[in-house]
Length: 443
Image (cartoon, rainbow, N blue to C red; front, side):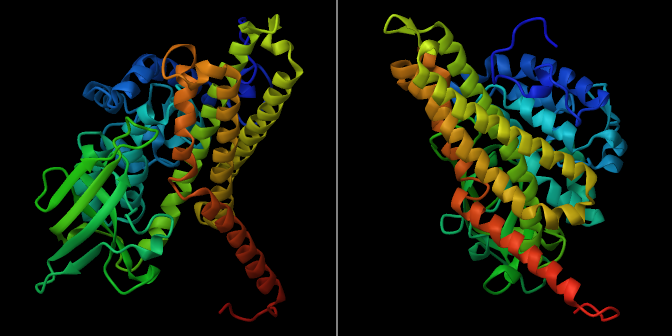
């Protein structure tokens, strides 16, 4: 336990000196190493860089050289590839083969300690969500061509799914990839919107339509971006995450080798949905930490701020507001921890089925909690919380980040609905399996 008093709600219980069944010595060593590295190389200047709307290039290079982009990948890490590239440990304290989802949880929690999603997202979103489809579904030649430079940060990628007319409704993606008569290339036409990191990306793992309407017509391609013929990109001004490089991409007769197909034609919907699970869990982890940052800032403020002749903390209505939000954030963190632990215990195929719907729900709930905590902080800061500088600068900024959690990765209402539909589907499938006569074949 720290000798310095910890501001209530500012740290998860396991870092506030309370016992936890989840964290082994390897996790605790990793947390200390992460905090030291990330604090020094990102958090100290995160607010300043976010205000400037871009991080200096050397920050990405520093993280890449230290192998500190890799922990944003889903666990287990691509161990065989990393060892081929000479990467055996992360920060000298965790072997790549020992890295599990609790290490992932710790890394994402530490990266979010600035309270701002933009600075960390500008570094990790591309590799975190753009590389896994190649690792999981790409054939040997595709991996050989792209993974060495992407895993080491020598090249950058992004995930390019969303379009102006198709966001959470992935099955309606309209960007087309049509084979040339000789069958050697796809010609890609369409637009992608709200693509994080796109402006800096050399490549993208892109959802395209290679077949007819609906989900069975979707595929995924590695599409070159930066400086490639037929590709035009520009940054989009969004309300939050302003330093993460949100991008609009126009694709005009972009010629892509057929060898860039990820997996099989027509399997894109499956690949995308599986990839979303990691994205949504990552968002939930970061948003829960952001809720902590907002709530802890409010707690510090009300302990020193006086009104009506006494500190704000002496006002019952203030304590009540904090109590409600504190209960929400601690409940949310407990769910996230439990969820991540389950990821370490279940086979990947089982986790995708059993936890897929719940992943959507934990992501949606993280946005609901963040909204409450950010509102609480702004209201308790009063005029300072409505001001883009001074004491309330951070909580004002956090409040603008809220919808960057509630919309990307699947909008809140869609996620809540998806969660229930998936749970009902699993229930019906298990019921049918139990009712099936013994010895009968599964249809």
